[in-house]
Length: 125
Image 1 (cartoon, rainbow, N blue to C red):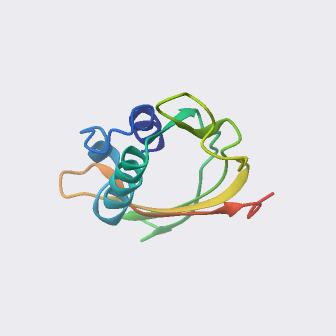
Image 2: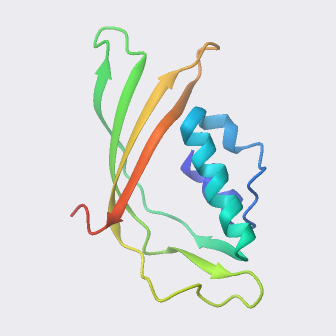
């Protein structure tokens, strides 16, 4: 999901069909809205986040249908820039932040992120 979002962010393509490949529901809505806001504000995202997701729980344990993921993602090299002149959008540096996600089995058997939360910089070590 994050790679699809990162790729779409290079042009703030809020309609990218790739977003729905690994996200659904609220997660998909939030990804699209974030990209729409960036497009509206003339911003693009450059670079890559540094991610290291881990399963924190699964339900039911014997045959999981829902998995909770925890990550301490680093956005230091994944920042917003002005599309018109290529300058950094602001002076806010990236950094390490807590990311939680809920991933669920879909009717077709695929797994998709249904919900996620990205917390403020400094929320994890």
